[in-house]
Image 1: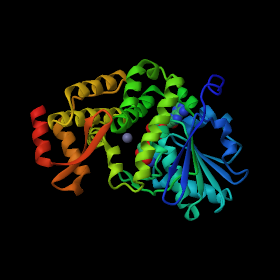
Image 2: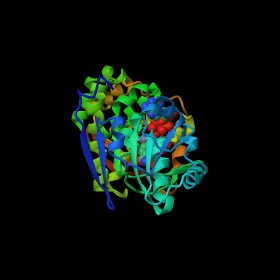
Image 3: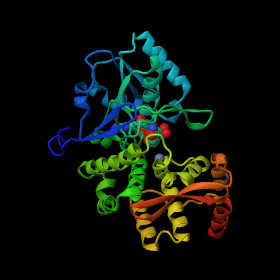
Image 4: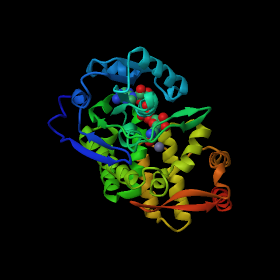
Amino acid sequence: MWYCVHLFSMEKITIKGRFADSAIFTGERINNLPHYIPSKGVYIITDGNVNAIYRGRFPECPTFVVEPGEASKSIQTVVKIYRWLLDSGADRSSFIVAIGGGVICDIAGFVASTFMRGVKFGFVATSLLAQVDASVGGKNGIDLDGYKNIVGTFNQPQFVICDVSMLITLPRIELANGFAEIVKHAIIADAGQFAFIEANVDRLNACDIEVITPLVEKSIRIKTNIVTADEHESGERRKLNLGHTWGHAVEKVSGLPHGQSVSIGLEFAARLSCSKGVLGNREYFRLINLLRGLKLQVCSTMSQRKIFEALLKDKKKEKDFIHFVLMEGIGSVRVEAISIQELKAFIKIEK
Ligand SMILES: NC(=O)c1ccc[n+]([C@@H]2O[C@H](COP(=O)([O-])OP(=O)(O)OC[C@H]3O[C@@H](n4cnc5c(N)ncnc54)[C@H](O)[C@@H]3O)[C@@H](O)[C@H]2O)c1
Ligand SMILES: [Zn+2]
């Protein structure tokens, strides 16, 4: 795009996976995609919205267009894509490129990891959430019978291109979904990034690429550092669940978008941290102001009991304790097992 190419340098962030490394490029453009892919045997997977806007910038390759939305993250879609690949003559040397948001990256990553026992693949992440979260870390997967991401693999793409100039066409509600994860990353590990977001709320709301570009890069680095330390999700990676334990339950009960639900989950985690004396009131209010400034919800009129019931259903394996990520301050968190009794008491007090 005319206004960016000369303004921002490209940054390369490498993720060291167990089986392969993955390179994430921020400040890169979709127009340069041909430099990253083989000259033949490339298959593109995208969704209807992204295809309608950006098809003209795709390389000339066979393209499968998925219906936009989470409902497409199904085994039925995957089977259709397998058949399309076979009918189009794909083989073990083929290369799959996802061009889209988190839904497309998850589907394409799963298809590429399983088709003919795995072919190489890369992403052009086009939503903010995909750039800072879904395309980072090597997880992919599909939903089944109402369970999110219940079938999938760990497998790193060869490359991820984060073209921030494509965010300009992203609906506002989708931008907020990405902001929630960016704020989450800052609370987990980077007080400086948090202050940067505070100082640039208006420009971020206006999708000013000049501020979004360094923000995306920093956010990816935070997640990368965590997943590199813990590719298969045992200890450190649990920190990424900040705001998601309560947030997922809110999402289930309310049907609110993911980012809005996570924002409500972040407020809950902060309040719980305050009640345990781990977080100060000043930090709590800084967080609330920031989330509100980014047009994210921090409270809801939903029944706390209903959310809690959904949470227990979600975490049925954890029995008497639930692992919560608590905030120790801006830029520092810790995972703690909290008893169901304690949580019940906390929620009742708040009623
Ligand atoms: N694998 C992981 O580690 C991981 C992490 C977080 C989330 N996810 C998954 O990511 C998915 C959510 O991702 P998402 O929020 O990107 O959803 P999405 O892929 O559905 O994209 C959101 C919407 O924005 C549209 N869109 C995308 N890019 C656009 C652009 N540049 N211009 C205009 N419209 C555009 C899409 O068509 C869609 O309608 C969920 O399925 C979630 O489970 C995966
Ligand atoms: Zn999330």
